[in-house]
Each structure stands twice: as C-alpha cells, then as structure tokens.
Image (cartoon, rainbow, N blue to C red; front, side, top):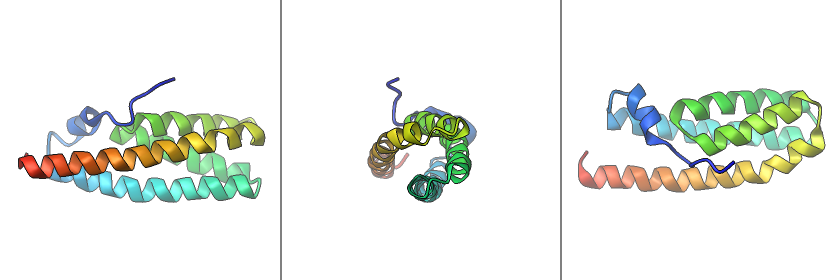
Amino acid sequence: MNLPILDPQVLHQCTDGDLALAQEIYVQFLETSSEDAAHIRVGLQSNDLRAVFEAAHRLKGSSRTVGALAIGACAERLEESAHADDLVRAKQYLPALIEAHTDLRAELTRLIQTQGSTGS
C-alpha cells in the first residue's frame, strides 16, 4: 500500500480553509504523534502489546483526522498486530512508522513555509 504522506485537503475541509488553524493543528499533531510513536516503541521493547495497541489506536485516529494517511496506515497495522498478540509482526511495522513520521515532518515543514511565503 503506497499512500501519500499527507492529504492537505482533509484538514482544509475541517478548518474551512483557515490556514493558521491548520498549521496550529499540524504542529500539535506532530507533538502528539511523536509521543504516541514513543509509546509504541517502548511498548514493543517491553513486550507490552496493550500499550502498543492503545498508542497505535490513538495515532491511527489522529492521523486520519489531519490527513496523515501513511502514518494512519502504519498505525492501523500496528494496532491489528497488537490486537492479534503478534509481537514479531508489530515490530516489523515500526521502521515504516518512523519513516512515515520523518517524511511527514519534512512535508509539513515545507507546506508551512510555502503557505507562509505566499501569504495564503
């Protein structure tokens, strides 16, 4: 599954095109998604699949709300693996989640800079 890192139209529709509000939400999302990713990483290291499930579930929902589609898909796979008590499979999805989060941070930085420079 090759989903885009970000679909800005998802949040654009939710904010009625308010770019300042969208940027604020993106910044908040980056913070909370980093926390959820850290909880997933710790949960995997300590074999705590319940913690992985809970953090992945939160991350899946918040990612889809802001249009972070690739992260949402990774989080869904982690959530399903944790729910199935499959630690090995869950650990296999962590690198993809980290990569998607890194890519999203770069994409949001570019998007915010572009919107700021155009005055939109």
